[in-house]
Image (tube, rainbow, N blue to C red; front, side, top):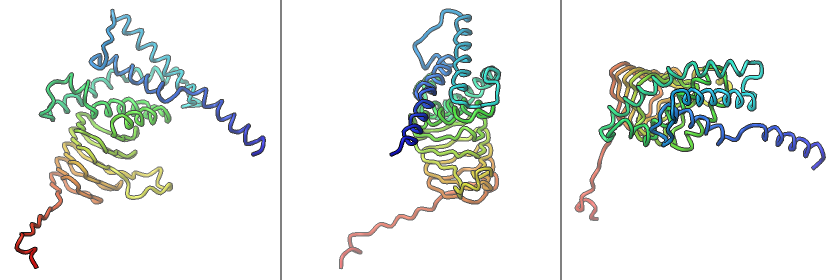
Length: 271
């Protein structure tokens, strides 16, 4: 190994040291959600002014993280941070629709407090919504760190670029994959093990719509796989468990696998 090799590795190490760890970056997101939803934390604030100060502190930290990660080299990071926090009231409103959808749609949910504190689906949706707001401002790296952190905690993988409407309900959720160019409407309910993926992962398709569109009020049951950028699941449809779909279906459809059970009697097994 020559000197150039060591110099190259050392330079990479110095660059990496300047960037906060993924744990630190994710802590910022957790702090924001704990301000929005004190149900997630025992911490209490003494006044509205203190609450405002906490938001201002997080705004400054976001600006610092963008500078450290070189998220947008030619952008005004301070303005981007302000633009993001200007979206926080709307982010809060939409998250409240997700809480309502989960509480209303799950007979096991006893309170909205329980949804906020204990439901992995809401946890993953929260990180996705925050990440998507940042992604929409043209900030590429931080959103991926946020959604991958939630992925590591819940097993739910939502790309920050996916477009997801209000009242989104993830039930159980482990193993769900929602790809980059997915479009999901309002009042959609999705169970564990669902894949909304691409028919091809060739790099040449990076700038094309590769993932399906799910219209309003669709239910997708566990283990279903829906693939392709031209695949549209019409509104008010039901996709049964373990279904494999690569073609569009019209509104109001029900798609199920047909199971066949064959029982061998004791008599037929005798030779």
